[in-house]
Image (tube, rainbow, N blue to C red; front, side, top):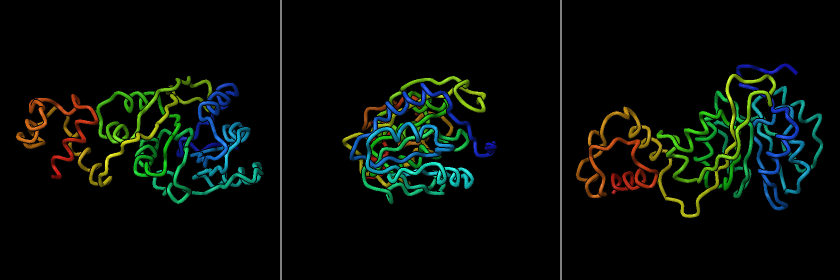
Length: 243
């Protein structure tokens, strides 16, 4: 099958790595699983060896969907021709475990959509560009803070380009997002807008973006830059601006 470059398709083909990833996904008997971008089903077939209740495959490429429907006959599978960047995951259940080899060109959008659906996604295991994974884990960006407000993030493993077909020009990494127990109650769209504004023009000090009296009330140095804040402090700032 010819892969479509504009869809960022790079198939994971290393059998041992695929088995290890399925092990890290760790499907359980009562779980509803969702795979994003199954492609030709290499990882899907390995996951099918485990017990679970349902597996929903989200694929944006019609030719891949047709192939999957022809080759995968497991009664637990449902295949959806949808775009995961704006898909309403909560239509599939209330307690989902999501996984996938995310296309590099839209990976950040899918991660963002995961957070927007965090009420029904308790865990996600994603393969990302290594640089993106590292920035999500430790970097200073609105998306990293958006993710880490609702999820803890574990860096599971690095994957060199030779494990994929065609080999990408970058290294990949596998990460796990695990939903936190004490979730903040915020308007997600409003919180996202707050973050994008806060992280714009990072070189500016906080007092250029937030009222200085609010910063002092929280014990924050008004001369700090946003990159010095952790997600908990950012959330406190957001709540203070709304009170």
